[in-house]
Image (cartoon, rainbow, N blue to C red; front, top):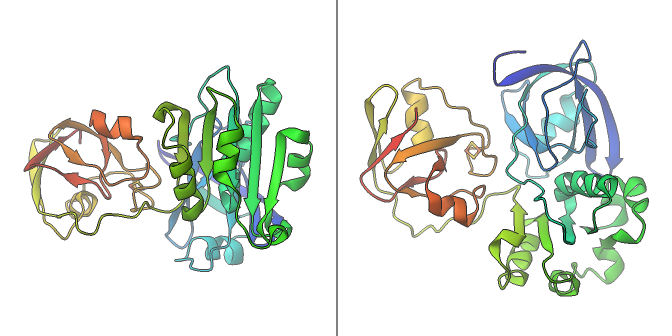
Length: 319
Ligand code: FES
């Protein structure tokens, strides 16, 4: 262990999965059992170039001596996926955060519908595998630009008629009909979606009439932020030390905490990974993250300090 929140793991194997997608197998040098995780969980990779990136685990349940992630090369990469693809080599040691899960598979007796787009397949592939092993009813629909860009196709094909592919280029460039997939599901189904922004928007529109607890989304990119929302300054009180700090309009709470050497875990700084989730003891956060559900945001028990702000003058945080 590197510290209480991270592990020092060896990159044991790198495998080509599809055009632009590599999977990475990380294991302890002594091959011991790794901290437990559940499908939908992700880990932070602290890359040797100083960048931290979150990736969903794609292991099967019970596969507990390694973490398996898959990384798509992003043409707009700010140094994360490009470094992974071009510079990581088997044998290297990598600091890896403990698994966290903001996209759990809800226990329900009913049908589960999994809709994946592009590299959004990773958490849903893990869920489909878990549902298959558990004998639970599910449908898994995986959309990509083309067959060449689809990962894990051999395993997914073994799921039989519970799984379906949609390759845009084989449908004249048309994307998956998400509304049709939702409409075809039985009553009481739970829907999960992870994919590019356009897919998530279509998913949100197609599920808007459903009970929110039946609709589950994971984002790899931040939700569009309302640029017109005012960003005024406010005060934060750190309950454990009693310190009071000012967060100016042009800085995040996380920036101010870092400026004052206050340790808070963080990764994406975009409100999508959940690393910086912090308990709120008083005050009303202005939630701008893409991690918490609407119900969790309304409860105001925690907030993502990298992006969320304050609706009033002051917040008291459990720091
Ligand atoms: S650092 Fe990722 S949500 Fe805040």
